[in-house]
Image (cartoon, rainbow, N blue to C red; front, side, top):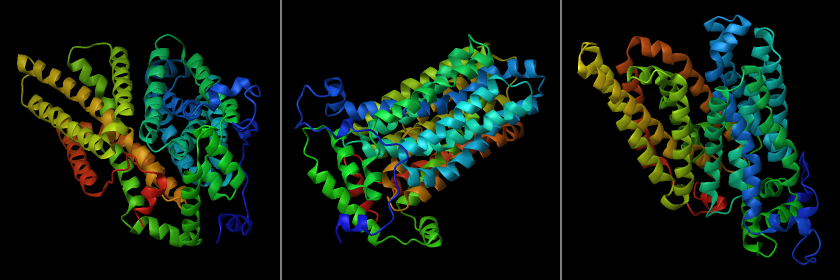
Length: 488
């Protein structure tokens, strides 16, 4: 059965956003035509441009995550909220993100990756407006839920889109831009929150998605999604502009077509069969889900949550300086990962990152155990506070060097195209669900035993080393089709 026969024989869903006709103009046309688009036509600039535009989504993601930190006292004072009400406000983004995660895969499959990002942008904008004009907790909570829903869709769609458009030798670095953008968004929220009112900060939160929406009209849809939908002409045109009009794409086109045909032949349309296959088989699907779950079980959210207390114990009184400092460290370390991931490989960085987190958390837990049996007046107690600070900073650096970015890259690479929507939704939901659980239990665990809490996180990161060494494949330098064939 040919690819076109497959196309004619089934109902074809159309992309929500058509890219426009400019990218159909090949190099056979005169150079005087569309001269303003010459930069876009360059071999790699078009891919970079696409990544930069969709990276506005994860910047929005990070801004949402970072918003509550610098605004807590002002929102509580202006709206007369209790601390527990503000805690609910903070956690509602996770609840909304879980709902968005459930829907994200199917939205991205039915209306395309670009259409999915458009859908995600609208509730984000409405949510920020609701927060900025809130007079009581009801509008505040509604806005946070809407933001969370948009972020849940973005967290799945952006890494998948980047993986599907990137050349194999650049896919890891470009995929890591997703997490780099999240850390930039967090840092922006921290820094801007030092200078502007919480309502103004909410208005500023509108800008990433406001710029993203028109930007989506100037980038091509994912060629692999177009191929899956049977839109052959659009698929080849999209791939051509992503690789450059002077590039021969015939080999890549044939590989994607052959992989698509094989997936359709092996595809079982029964939802129950897909779900059983995803949940029971310990293969690529479970590797992607497992990495995203372990990413959150490392306790990174709890560590960041308690960081201000650790900074104070080490003699740094300003929590604002501490949070901005951690934000800068995350951005720098994630930037290093973006540069290294296509050189060193995913497995090596994950193992180094997990090992660094394990040692750092071991140092923090040991310091807390010793502080419990040390007099607060002794000099050794102050030294233990500094050791806790060193451990937390080292843990954040180690997390950003691999575990922060690479699980999203690997998830987007190894999930087969025929079940990517369902499996991706499950993986994203699992990540957000565990993130919510870690955040909600952090206070309880820390009040029980600080040393014991960090020991639990240490054991989780130690297991992550074993998980990566035994089950995570190296995907560096391989096409998506080669990676997915290896799991058959």
